[in-house]
Image (cartoon, rainbow, N blue to C red; front, side, top):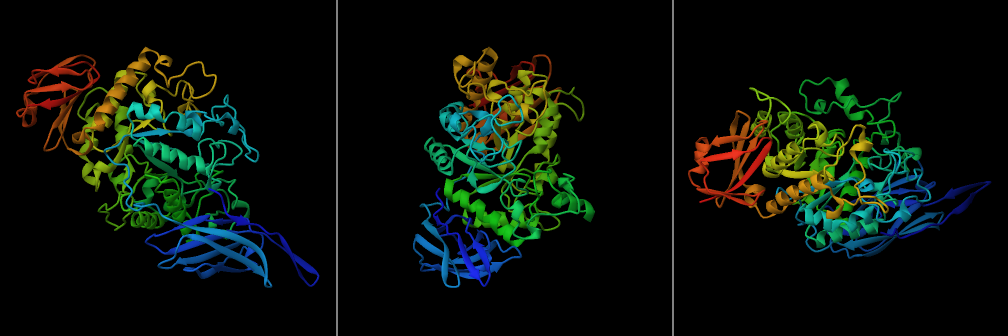
Length: 615
């Protein structure tokens, strides 16, 4: 993506004085014809740009209003794209005393056919979550880039390691062969920060891929390559905060562009205050206006220009890169009325677009508050189609480690699912055992591979959209060293010179191969199983450490039985006759073996048995 701009630096005499004028950027850098909303707001930044006279010469593309703020280095142009406007290049001119001091060639493009009707990720998909800096280094030449303040240091667990877009592109076949259908990549936008820039959540340019990951064009190319394989792409976006190195922080458009305090004030991180009917004003205010970190200035989404900027940025990336979905970081932290307006606008332009919000709370009712069309007593509607299922995550990390009792052990999974009544759409919730912000699942299970297999079997057969964190398939762990840098270890084989290459069969040890094959079998099987993707769910109260549930539709039924005991169990199945009385045999999908008699089922300790039932 090239910004079509002509820069002029002009000194205009005013008596004995002279004044400098410069055009630095216009954002969004281009736009498209054919959106439901004809309105577009352009942020224009440059030295004393507000003191110029601006005009646009293009049929159907005209200025409705020129907004000037206190800072003379900004203009906000309210533009309208009239009916019948054609694609082409509009010339935006800036004059001082009838002298042109700058021009910008603003491109209006035609949207791709059926752009508005794009199909998004759903419960038919499985998401593979990866961090680009830690996945694979396809282009070592971009590890260090002039102007980027943090340099690569693979010996520093919290530093940049050099993974990039080309590294992802080089291993798309690996992800496809594993069986995932959708890729969620943590933020790729520029993070020009002195340290901790690798994770991507301190954005310093909302319209530019970080050059250490690649270019905008490479990102669009990656999206195309993903689509050619029949897969989907989710972009991770961040509205709550930017990075302290963002170009506008030292030259704010207005004092209220970010949430300022008399002294640094950190968020209390109590997301529940945003939906708590009894929350105090001071607690609610500190949650939403406090800074996430010292290097993450908190954006004020109640500023109408900030609001427009963020909404348009989302639309721009969906259109530019052909996105299939969005993951919104820290979704409850911005002002929730603005987030509702964002969701509404996105769904107006892309009715089928799925957006999943990070709503990190431990109770289903709290998380459900943020899903679109929830029956909230305060009348709030987030217009957010999907949420991350943190209650399931919490239950999974406890269920297989506890002794069985009235309210512990595998009953935790039953109890959490029984609270799905809170969600407007429980099938459109992302379920996971771990991710990039928490210790890897094996850490919480004392490295017991059997428990990891049970967790994967559960998230791949329960309701919702499964997410798998990269490296799970090769038993990656956080290890004895704690912290995000270790949670996000490099994928072995992703760097030239790595001693082991786990992308290949030859590079995996026996346990890694066993886990890879287990997950591969489940994922490939799930791809064609509509009954698991969208079928109904019915479960039975766990007894004696055995939890059994069924996924079913009008065509077929799948039975899942989980043994949370430390010994093999043989189960008399007559309790499940409301399903089993229709079936005589089954297929164990993990082992590929036929089960000739369903009356008694033997299941090893810490194992999930998945059976396609047959009449």
